[in-house]
Structure formats: C-alpha cells, structure tokens
Image (tube, rainbow, N blue to C red):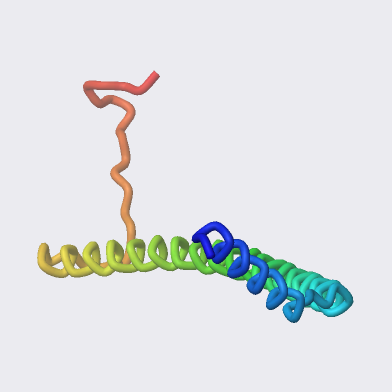
Length: 116
C-alpha cells in the first residue's frame, strides 16, 4: 500500500471516531439560557447594591457637611472665647480695675475754649 492509501485510511478512521462525539444542542441551549439568567440576576443584584451605596454616600456627605459647619462655628466660638480670655488676662496684667462710679468734668461758661 502506498502512503496515500494509508493516510486516507487513517483519516477515514478519525472521521468515524468523531461520530461518537456528537454535540447535544439541547444541552448547549439549556446551558446558554441558564448562564444568561444567572448573569441577568447578578446584574440586577449588583445594580441594586450600587444604588444603595450611592444613597448612603449622599446621606453621609450631607452629614459631613453639617458636621463641617458645626465644626467651623465651634472653632469661631473657641477663638472668640480664647481672645476674650487673653483680653481679661492682659487687663489683669496692666492692673486695670472695674469702675465703681463715673464722674464727668464740668465745662465752665468762661473757659478758654467753648464748644459750638
């Protein structure tokens, strides 16, 4: 036998062995539908999760803004009270005292300068 005949016989044997490997199309279609349904369910679940997280982020950013405003007002209040404490300490260092009574200087009629 020639090599051509032997190679044709080998190819023919391989073709007959491939008949046993039939594709079950119904199984392939069922698996495809199952995979598509699984992907659709996971997509819906993930979109729901993303929406929930976006809602939480929005609420947290609002809370953060309100806390930042409160922090700013507290810083201003602290600065004012610290400034007032420094003024009181400085007044004590300079021996300032609270006034007990107030007396006014009277301008006489025949003074050198007159107010007009």
